Length: 239
Length: 257
Image 1 (cartoon, each protein chain N blue to C red):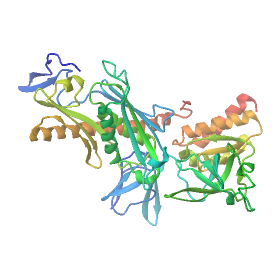
Image 2 (image 1 turned 90 degrees about the vertical axis):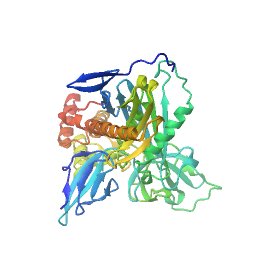
Image 3 (image 1 turned 90 degrees about the horizontal axis):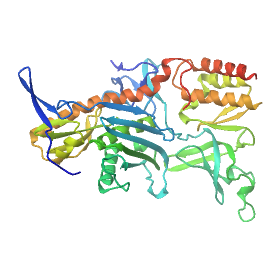
Image 4 (image 1 turned 120 degrees about the vertical axis):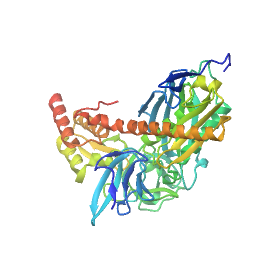
């Protein structure tokens, strides 16, 4: 019979034995089995689920870089222009590649046309990761609804590991943020947050709230506390 | 490092009819110096740690995984681990030139090899992980303190590792095998053996020996080191956890940095 050495939402550090026994399953890259033991490889919060009568453990990392996955929506910053592609900083160890075919619908002739006319260095784009594997840099696309150059709003950078917390369970946190501040918030998987606010004060409150979430991501009851914080700030500033 | 007259490093005291070796600072042979660890001490690094073994003080900073620069150093199947062990000019009694010495180059290499044994570099191909260790104050055992700090900083950066690494130096002073030797003991020691261990994996990832030990003494030294490392390992885990537990104290806690 397998034994689980930790409780749900416990903090584990590398080398911690999470569970013992062959009948305990694990998922994700942050756990490994040595003999009968399942050992944590990263600092994070343990999640224990029941699935088909078996217990499944996984770890939500508390820190770490953004690793692209196909289908992710990311906010990128154009860094460099090639002949038929753009290099895009996607806040990751890997640099995004946006080819001209993924931007324009018409044929592109580098002899008479310049990529600079469409996207320039310093532009922010909302893009989707088309493909990424271990051997090649991630390919991006801006074809799709709502994708493309970002023309208004502000961008807040947070740690990529905090993204699930800012969205919350079934979007509870992000919906609360939007309804409490009246801002439009879009959280990209790579830890960049696009916000559109009706006023400067509301934007400042929103930024402070997001920073608060980033700092206290591992605590419970955070949604309620942030809601309280926003209401308090709005009262104080009279907005 | 001028050697004057050799001071007395071990005094023998009789307690309950037993002869007990007492070291120059009052420690017993199997006793560590007071140890302090703190994680997340640098805001600009992805992960950082400060470790003190007595008066030895080392800070470690980790950056990465990040894009490999220059690009040609990148490996197609795993991350490149780069380590720099460096002693600050003000860390020693006499000013140390800030240029990397042969000793520092060697220590950077052995520390890198010790960490490569635990870091799962295959998760981040074509990237680099940079580890900088800066000795702020030196009183013996700096390489082992540096390794302890580096593994904490790596864990703080969210880099996947099979285990933490804890290091400690053992040595033979006045014929007695002692744990965690300091600078004074090291200067007059018959032997000095820094060891780093991944305790959960039960693997020794660094072992150097300067001096002469008999087989029995090596055996004894290893056992002592293992005991010391287990204590350091416990403190490491505590330090990593405490970074997150502070904020659980109460709502509204956690001012910005």
